Image (cartoon, rainbow, N blue to C red; front, side):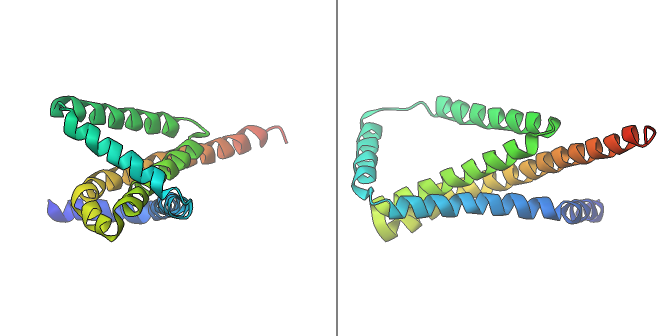
Length: 171
């Protein structure tokens, strides 16, 4: 059973390796661009004031953890439906690539903002608070994004082959 599952996963990985590389490169380019823009922007004071204001608001405000979970979960469900719709459309590959870039940009912005605000201690904060979330969510979305991207590309290939089949009898 385990060997069969391992074989299926290995087959899927080798079949879609180009898609995984493309999606990962787009994701990492979003992270790098975000970090570069945030660190070189010179707006450290604005970010620091924003973070201090946010922290003071959190200290003075009680949150409902159930509602916070539902908000996050509904955001993920919306993202899954967006990617699913992109995988069913001909131009969905552009939507998947754009969404992946924005996700990478947002993760990079979180890290760069923490680094600008807290300094070198932000690495510890990032590893303890944000990184576990990224370890769970990011690979899931990268795999699903790759699936949607490959689906969209296959649809485009199918349309190209369909054109050949439709035009061939005419010529």
